[in-house]
Structure formats: structure tokens, C-alpha cells
Length: 188
Image 1: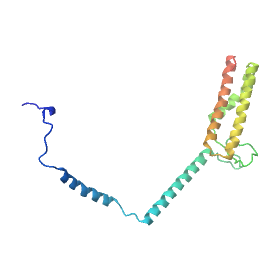
Image 2: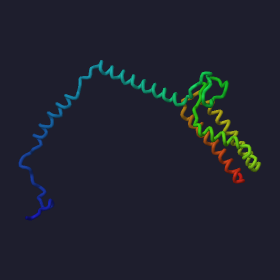
Image 3: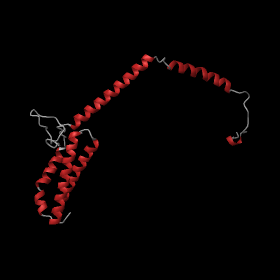
Image 4: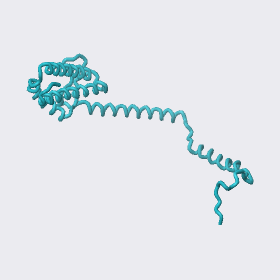
């Protein structure tokens, strides 16, 4: 038995008859019937109803999203009306809301520990370094107050929230740098 390769077959053999008209005739009626079966008559009342349902769904999704955002950002209040977490609003600021942002308890503990030992660590630093550290901490403190006040007026502003988190991180960096520099006996 001789094996024939595809390359050995002739390239230009014409079919004995043209099959395309029969194929097209069989495809066309099925396509037309399928399109007619899936297409429902769109009455104007149905279109209006669908538009109202879509609008209601969008409003519902927006309301749920805002509710979830508020519940995550705002801390619950106790009976006396005071928030359970640190309030990040300047007291007496005009048109500001009483907003309390929940912060991580580990962050609060670490910050409190660093602040408790700050004075002793500052005393171990050279005077010029001490002045720079205090100026940095003062600048960070003012920035935190400004951001907290602005967030009190616009609590849903994501940019202000991100800036506030970055400011907290900057403060922690300075406090940990002071701690490491005072233990090493060198400047920052």
C-alpha cells in the first residue's frame, strides 16, 4: 500500500456541482425563524417600565453603597452622645459634622507607646536633630488637624481620607525614626 501525501494530490479539482445555493437555502430559513422566535414585540409601555426598573435599581444600589460607606466610616455613639473612637474634628468648627473615624487598636497602642517614650528619646538626640524632629511633629500635627477638620465637613471625600492615612503613617515614621536614632545614639 502506497502512502499518499496531501502535497501529492492535485490542487485544482472542481466539484461536480455547486453546493452553496442549497446550503444557503437551508441556513436562511433557520436563521430567520430563530431571530423571530427570540425577538419579542417591544411595546412602548414595556420599554417605559424597563427604564423605570433600571432607574430604581440604580438608585437602590447607590443607596446601599452610601449606607455601607457610612457604616464603615462612622463610629457608633454611646448613650452620652460621645463617639467611641477618637473624634477627628476640630471642636467648634463651623459647619462641620460630628464625625468619628474608627482606627486600628494596634495603631493606637503603638502610637501611645511611642509618644510615652518620646521625651526621653528626644533628650538623647543632638540639639539640632531634636529641633528638626519637633518641627516635623508640629507640622504633621497641624496637617492632621487640617485634614480632620476638612473630613468633618466632607466625610465621604476619599482623597482627604487617603491624605489623613498618609499623615498618620508619616507621624509613625518620624516616631519610629526618633526611637531608632535615640537607641543608636546618632542623629536622624
